[in-house]
Length: 570
Image (cartoon, rainbow, N blue to C red; front, side, top):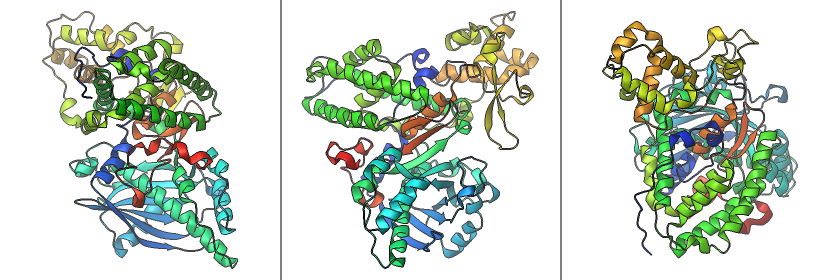
């Protein structure tokens, strides 16, 4: 059955989409960066090799994992360390880790590995070069790691329930790119097709890291069994596949969305265009409905396995599970999808019936049968900020006022004199060199505040314009009031990029930074969000994904949803 597009459906209003409560309810989708990467690797038939694995019985040494595409090879250089338990920390200020990594542009020579060995294990205390694309580190999930090594060394499989409860054997605490520590700047690699979509280098690094973790835990079990005169069991492939890479993400990531408004706009706009495209289809074929039905069941399994002890996420999970029952009731035997404009009807029902968590879960799932229509939207998710940030001094004050009223209506109507509306202040910690959120009226942080409250600053700009003539040019205003340049720039950006600005107060007493963290991580493709406070969250990446050597066109896309046939093994 051919489908045709309805042209009257628009993208959702930024005033609806760009609220923190909704952004903090986003889920992975076809446009998530991990899935974009695995589809490309399979489509282009990349090959993978392990040219070096020199690690001793104590888990100390170096290994190299290479990925070769149509034009280039990239290699993960992994350093494995024997870290004392008291030195293991997920904090950014840690100085030692169980494993440290660099993604190398090409295949490293022995001299390259020697150079990296003197720098990568020290992370911020070391320096790399333009031949390195990213630098990262990871720590073991200690109890689970020991359980897996011990079980395999004794010739047994590890307990599937224990694996499922954690979901990973190692978690990264940072994956640095874009010039960090001397690595290649984004501009040096952005023209390469494989890195055109944002964060593809970092996602490749994590994809290869997962392979390293599987091989390392097997190696440690083999060495322990050999010392005892036994032969270790080989980790069951399905158990191995159920394991992803964990990640601990804190406040350091939250300002990214505020500091990259054009890039953020392109992410959201691509997703919103995908949702609009699917809602505009006048019919769903039997094959499309069947795929949606299968993936809905598989996604529900993901939700069933998703646990958290944080009160916010516990509530959201409860609401989502209730929403799933409502979806089942609405869809019935899926006849609801056989009428005209079925996805628009489904979406409109969800908007009236479900929580934000359920609405966004369903919005992502609706895209799944339509890769041919929406996948190319990922090509527009990158951004060159340079021309977009140029202020237009020729704009009139009247035009600027109109933009402010359209984009920042909520901010202009906020009473910024009330303490609760400006209770927090973003600053950079001198000790940790990372963003922090302080209590404005309880800590001496206001002097060091970062410009991460665009709503408050836009309202101040609006007040400053009150007595200026409408036909006056912005350039003249800024000559008199240069303190408002950053706000004028943001307003003009939002005028051209409608999803560039969060339409919420980022310094209120009620702000939840985890909403910003979850939004960014959902675009990465993360699952199993588990907040540990309102300021940091643990996630899982590449859980259920094929390993590089098993990647194929058949398994490169829907791996994010666990198979229904795997039973307890997933």
